[in-house]
Length: 183
Image (cartoon, rainbow, N blue to C red; front, side, top):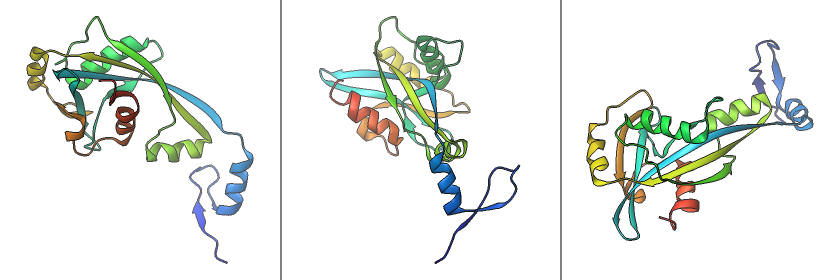
Protein backbone atom coordinates (compact mmCIF):
# COMPACT_ATOMS: atom_id res chain seq x y z
CA UNK A 1 0.00 0.00 0.00
CA UNK A 2 1.52 3.29 -1.07
CA UNK A 3 1.06 6.52 0.80
CA UNK A 4 1.16 9.96 -0.77
CA UNK A 5 3.07 12.67 1.05
CA UNK A 6 2.19 16.33 0.66
CA UNK A 7 4.27 19.37 1.50
CA UNK A 8 2.55 21.39 4.20
CA UNK A 9 1.76 24.86 2.87
CA UNK A 10 1.85 26.40 6.34
CA UNK A 11 5.47 27.58 6.69
CA UNK A 12 5.31 27.62 10.47
CA UNK A 13 4.91 23.84 10.49
CA UNK A 14 7.68 23.34 7.95
CA UNK A 15 7.40 19.58 7.47
CA UNK A 16 5.83 16.97 5.24
CA UNK A 17 2.56 15.46 6.38
CA UNK A 18 0.88 12.19 5.62
CA UNK A 19 -2.28 12.62 3.52
CA UNK A 20 -4.46 10.25 5.55
CA UNK A 21 -3.65 11.82 8.93
CA UNK A 22 -4.03 15.32 7.47
CA UNK A 23 -7.46 14.49 6.00
CA UNK A 24 -8.57 12.93 9.30
CA UNK A 25 -7.69 16.13 11.16
CA UNK A 26 -9.44 18.22 8.51
CA UNK A 27 -12.60 16.08 8.71
CA UNK A 28 -12.85 16.60 12.47
CA UNK A 29 -12.53 20.38 12.22
CA UNK A 30 -15.59 22.56 11.74
CA UNK A 31 -15.42 24.72 8.66
CA UNK A 32 -15.90 28.43 9.06
CA UNK A 33 -18.64 29.96 6.88
CA UNK A 34 -17.50 33.11 5.10
CA UNK A 35 -19.98 35.27 3.23
CA UNK A 36 -18.89 37.54 0.40
CA UNK A 37 -21.28 40.15 -0.99
CA UNK A 38 -21.06 40.68 -4.74
CA UNK A 39 -22.85 42.27 -7.66
CA UNK A 40 -23.54 41.26 -11.25
CA UNK A 41 -24.45 43.94 -13.77
CA UNK A 42 -26.19 42.74 -16.90
CA UNK A 43 -26.95 45.35 -19.55
CA UNK A 44 -28.97 44.01 -22.48
CA UNK A 45 -30.06 45.29 -25.88
CA UNK A 46 -33.48 44.36 -27.25
CA UNK A 47 -33.16 43.31 -30.89
CA UNK A 48 -36.86 42.49 -31.23
CA UNK A 49 -39.60 41.51 -28.76
CA UNK A 50 -38.37 38.49 -26.82
CA UNK A 51 -34.91 38.62 -28.43
CA UNK A 52 -32.05 40.20 -26.47
CA UNK A 53 -28.32 40.56 -26.78
CA UNK A 54 -26.26 40.77 -23.58
CA UNK A 55 -23.21 42.87 -22.76
CA UNK A 56 -20.28 40.76 -21.61
CA UNK A 57 -16.68 41.66 -20.75
CA UNK A 58 -13.55 39.63 -21.44
CA UNK A 59 -11.28 39.00 -18.45
CA UNK A 60 -7.66 40.04 -18.97
CA UNK A 61 -6.24 37.08 -17.01
CA UNK A 62 -8.39 34.12 -18.14
CA UNK A 63 -9.59 35.55 -21.49
CA UNK A 64 -13.06 34.25 -20.59
CA UNK A 65 -16.21 36.26 -21.29
CA UNK A 66 -18.54 37.01 -18.40
CA UNK A 67 -20.98 39.42 -16.85
CA UNK A 68 -19.78 42.62 -15.26
CA UNK A 69 -19.14 41.64 -11.66
CA UNK A 70 -17.29 42.44 -8.50
CA UNK A 71 -17.26 42.60 -4.75
CA UNK A 72 -19.16 45.04 -2.59
CA UNK A 73 -16.77 47.04 -0.44
CA UNK A 74 -17.50 47.36 3.28
CA UNK A 75 -18.67 50.97 2.97
CA UNK A 76 -20.83 50.40 -0.15
CA UNK A 77 -24.41 49.51 -0.79
CA UNK A 78 -25.05 47.01 -3.62
CA UNK A 79 -26.30 49.71 -6.00
CA UNK A 80 -23.17 51.82 -5.44
CA UNK A 81 -20.97 48.77 -6.09
CA UNK A 82 -22.89 47.96 -9.27
CA UNK A 83 -22.39 51.49 -10.59
CA UNK A 84 -18.68 51.40 -9.71
CA UNK A 85 -18.14 48.00 -11.35
CA UNK A 86 -20.03 49.09 -14.48
CA UNK A 87 -17.83 52.17 -14.80
CA UNK A 88 -14.59 50.30 -14.08
CA UNK A 89 -15.21 47.33 -16.35
CA UNK A 90 -16.73 49.20 -19.31
CA UNK A 91 -14.46 52.28 -19.19
CA UNK A 92 -17.64 54.29 -18.48
CA UNK A 93 -19.02 53.52 -21.95
CA UNK A 94 -22.40 52.45 -20.50
CA UNK A 95 -24.25 54.61 -18.02
CA UNK A 96 -26.27 53.16 -15.18
CA UNK A 97 -29.96 54.00 -15.64
CA UNK A 98 -32.37 55.24 -12.99
CA UNK A 99 -34.60 52.21 -13.52
CA UNK A 100 -33.26 48.65 -13.27
CA UNK A 101 -34.56 45.21 -12.45
CA UNK A 102 -32.78 43.44 -9.62
CA UNK A 103 -32.81 40.11 -7.85
CA UNK A 104 -30.63 38.21 -5.39
CA UNK A 105 -29.20 34.72 -5.22
CA UNK A 106 -26.62 32.80 -3.23
CA UNK A 107 -23.85 30.73 -4.80
CA UNK A 108 -21.16 28.41 -3.51
CA UNK A 109 -19.25 28.65 -6.80
CA UNK A 110 -15.54 29.39 -6.40
CA UNK A 111 -12.79 29.23 -9.02
CA UNK A 112 -10.42 26.31 -8.49
CA UNK A 113 -7.53 28.45 -7.24
CA UNK A 114 -9.77 29.99 -4.57
CA UNK A 115 -11.15 26.60 -3.51
CA UNK A 116 -7.59 25.54 -2.67
CA UNK A 117 -7.14 28.62 -0.47
CA UNK A 118 -10.56 28.01 1.14
CA UNK A 119 -9.52 24.44 1.92
CA UNK A 120 -6.26 25.60 3.48
CA UNK A 121 -8.13 28.12 5.61
CA UNK A 122 -10.78 25.53 6.49
CA UNK A 123 -13.52 27.77 5.11
CA UNK A 124 -16.70 27.41 3.13
CA UNK A 125 -17.24 30.57 1.10
CA UNK A 126 -20.65 31.56 -0.14
CA UNK A 127 -21.32 34.56 -2.31
CA UNK A 128 -24.50 36.58 -1.96
CA UNK A 129 -25.17 38.23 -5.30
CA UNK A 130 -27.32 41.22 -6.10
CA UNK A 131 -27.98 41.27 -9.84
CA UNK A 132 -28.91 44.42 -11.74
CA UNK A 133 -30.15 44.10 -15.29
CA UNK A 134 -31.24 46.90 -17.55
CA UNK A 135 -31.84 47.76 -21.17
CA UNK A 136 -29.33 49.83 -23.12
CA UNK A 137 -30.17 51.90 -26.18
CA UNK A 138 -28.60 52.29 -29.60
CA UNK A 139 -26.39 55.22 -28.58
CA UNK A 140 -24.92 53.27 -25.65
CA UNK A 141 -24.31 50.35 -27.98
CA UNK A 142 -22.39 52.64 -30.31
CA UNK A 143 -20.56 54.25 -27.36
CA UNK A 144 -19.19 50.81 -26.40
CA UNK A 145 -16.82 51.19 -29.36
CA UNK A 146 -14.90 53.78 -27.31
CA UNK A 147 -14.03 51.14 -24.69
CA UNK A 148 -10.43 51.23 -23.54
CA UNK A 149 -8.90 48.03 -22.05
CA UNK A 150 -7.85 48.15 -18.41
CA UNK A 151 -6.07 45.83 -15.96
CA UNK A 152 -9.16 43.62 -15.47
CA UNK A 153 -11.02 43.76 -18.79
CA UNK A 154 -9.57 43.60 -22.29
CA UNK A 155 -12.74 43.66 -24.37
CA UNK A 156 -16.46 44.34 -24.25
CA UNK A 157 -19.18 43.12 -26.60
CA UNK A 158 -22.93 42.89 -27.01
CA UNK A 159 -24.21 39.70 -28.62
CA UNK A 160 -26.47 36.72 -28.10
CA UNK A 161 -25.10 34.81 -25.13
CA UNK A 162 -24.55 31.58 -27.06
CA UNK A 163 -22.40 33.41 -29.64
CA UNK A 164 -19.67 34.10 -27.08
CA UNK A 165 -16.77 31.65 -27.14
CA UNK A 166 -15.12 30.63 -23.87
CA UNK A 167 -17.57 31.99 -21.33
CA UNK A 168 -17.04 31.75 -17.58
CA UNK A 169 -18.80 28.60 -16.33
CA UNK A 170 -20.42 30.52 -13.49
CA UNK A 171 -22.02 32.90 -16.01
CA UNK A 172 -23.32 29.94 -18.01
CA UNK A 173 -25.11 28.76 -14.87
CA UNK A 174 -26.50 32.23 -14.13
CA UNK A 175 -27.69 32.60 -17.72
CA UNK A 176 -29.43 29.21 -17.80
CA UNK A 177 -30.92 29.50 -14.31
CA UNK A 178 -31.97 33.15 -14.10
CA UNK A 179 -31.85 34.87 -17.49
CA UNK A 180 -32.48 32.61 -20.46
CA UNK A 181 -36.25 32.49 -20.09
CA UNK A 182 -36.66 35.92 -18.47
CA UNK A 183 -35.11 38.16 -21.12
